[in-house]
Length: 55
Image 1 (cartoon, one colour):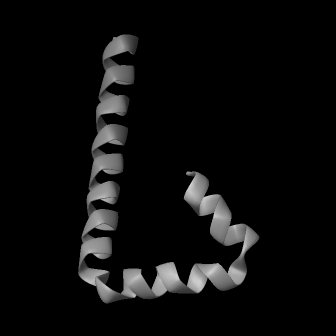
Image 2 (cartoon, rainbow, N blue to C red):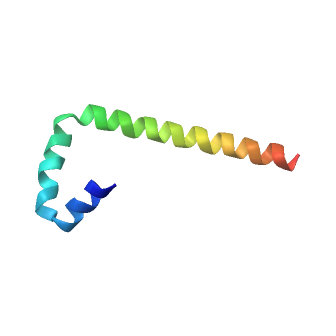
């Protein structure tokens, strides 16, 4: 979390990390895809827990 705050303080310093990320877009996209899947699964499980709790 702290490294994310550093680029905000230094806009120019955010370019090098961005270039490194662009070198492996497939890995970053796969991570984002996994995060989306995990979030959807968590939301689904959360709704099931709420429904069961109401029952």
